[in-house]
Amino acid sequence: MAHTMNRIPLCDITTCEMLSFPLGHVFQKRLVKEDNFEEEYFNSKTKMESETKFNKSKMKRKNVYKEAEDEVKKIKEEEDKEDIKPSKLSEYEKMIQKNREEQIAFLESLRMTEVKEEFKEAVRSLKPRKPKKIKVPKAVQAQQLPTRKSLRLAKIDIDMSEEAMAARAVAEAEKELKEVKLEPVLSFKDAITLDDYDDFVHHFKDIDFKGSAKPFKDYVSHFKSMKIDESRVARVVNGRITAVAIHPMQEKIIVSVGNKFGAVGLWHVNSDTLPFEFKPHLQGITNIQFNPDVPNMLYTSSYDGTMRSGDLEHEKFIEIYNVSDESSCTYFDFLSSTSFLVSHRNGTVSVVDNRSDHRTWMKRHKCHEYSVKTISIHPVDKNYFISAETKGCLALWDLRKLQKKPVTQVHHHKRVVYSAFFSPVTGNSVLTTSADDSICLLDTSVLGNPMFLQKSLKHNNWTGRWLSTFKATWLPNTDDTFVVGSMNPSRRIEIFDHKMNNIFNFDDEYFNCITSVNAFHPSLPVLAGCNSSGKVYVFAE
Image 1 (cartoon, rainbow, N blue to C red):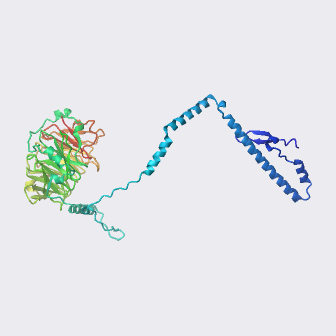
Image 2: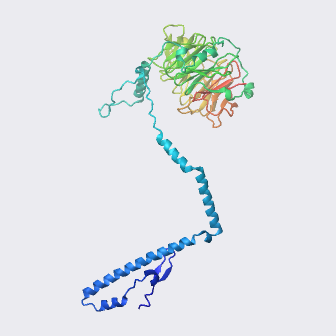
Image 3: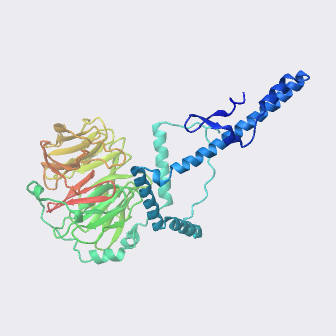
């Protein structure tokens, strides 16, 4: 029995192999007296005493085994340490260890740890800056509004019909206009948005805005030579451009634009000066034109219900018409150098004379039930004009006998008509642009006869809410060519002839946007395209 207990089997945890070690090496003179144990077990006086002694011996035996396992682990760890010595490493392992030591030495040479600690100390030393409080003048501090209360909880019925909602919107707009009003005569110095009035005077004081020029007609032959470069692209105003006009002088290219916030921008294209922005209106500009007979006068109409003349010679904006208490001005056209025809959002059309001091209309007529989008006066017979309505109606009127019904009307378009313009030379055709994705030519060669459809073109006019609407516009002094913006992914400005053929497209590497508003120079082969971010792109020779 003693011979069998000389060696005990143990399991190596790391290799899962059974190991045998001599008891003398492990236990170091600790002997288990099995013979005495057997005798005591079988010769006990009582069963209870024998069981107790057996359990005690069993616990002793477990402790001995545990001590033996700990000794085996220590011996195994010492052997593993001896195996990791460099002398026993393979060539590959030596190479890895060498690379590791070199990397550690390189990182220590960079002093990354010290730099990291210094950076932490620098961050801790910095104190957070407190934002400066901007002092708001008492005059512009917002008044505390009363707490809003729920009409539903108060059990008050709300009229949600379209008419009631439109009336509430108009009332809100009128309330805002009453709170802020502009002076009838506004100097350029007071109207300029930035503090650059002196620069404006310096660059524009020597320009003769009264100079006249011969009308230009042969645009088509110059299309291929009209190019654009970086110097002919500029942000003239902030915000979406809604109208554009080019001064007729030939010596210089002066572009004027109006935006949705009531600002007017002037840009001297062939100079190094930046554009200048003025604010003569409170709401969006609906039309902007230079007076063809008095070129130094720039006229504008706005949704705020006013019209102003910008005198470029005396540097002031003069209010010539004001119906802000009643409606908005949606468009205007020249009857003469001193009188205009103005359309309104409430469906009326007014005759205005800028020589009057009353700033009101001389004659007014209710032409449509809904808003009039544009009006156009016949170039030969000034008694006739055409109006385009929101519901798709086109109507021809005679100023000499304005009645409830027009001379003739047509409902060719199924949706809103954005614009309708007589051909500028003879007036034999009317060019229309509609939200039903069509551009049409109507025959008006005989005034009073029904307006028959001559040609129709399928054209994507869906600009959405963020872009100005397309308005196909005749080229100056021509009856056979017009220009319109394009929603085509390859950005361009499209030119069509009177047969609805796409005869040319203006595109360039510097031209990468949709220009909803476009206009040609009346005396030069120059095209200005305007986008919805306030930029103007000029194609010229």
